[in-house]
Length: 303
Image (cartoon, rainbow, N blue to C red):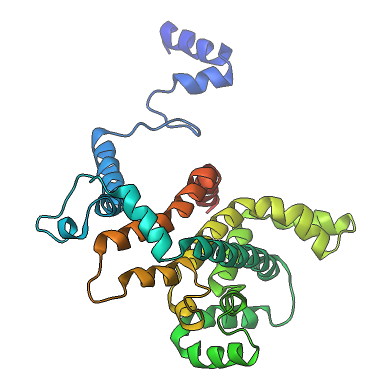
């Protein structure tokens, strides 16, 4: 063994462990940042442009008149009639009441879905009881049933309850979803250690106390994601609200059908109404976007 080799070994021995790790060439340690190449930035830019373009063209169509929208090629630059069309669409479709109704419907459905799905997901993921697997299989099996099959009996039930043309007819059938239960069950099964549940039992906490003090803080990122997805779905839902509601008490998608009535459809007016109906969702994403993206990323890392 040469003198230089012995000296190198002594230098490595004297070096602290953290510095030794830094001197190892080409090693990718935990927490080390990876830099994306130009191709990645180009793909991300293309994906961003393609994602934003439908919203941009909706704004362009809403800012022109019906004649210009139907021409070939279609316009790609904003016109001068944006605020005029927005005001006309707001009045013709009675969007003020429709937005209040949609906010009540979507907020109630999203809140109840998150609460019940988290409770059920915790039970299926961490509690041991007889028939758990059969119950979970039945919940998942309901996702295979087309919702159109339940329209007639559900409509008759809502009529018997006296909820025809009322918001409870839209809210109560969708207070919880099988997709939400399965989503929360999968998240809690991976993110919530059994040791935390056992520690709570040792301290004498019952299931509801464990749910409030241990499960909810762990499940908060997934709950934010589920709330956003459910809220957007309930806000944009058209099929069932169109059946049970009318123009005297509509949600936003039902109210927008008023703009397409008549022999000649004003496409620019319809786009103005669609743009107004999208603004609350954009505002929500701007306010809660950081929490939602953080929840998605945290769930991806835990998965």
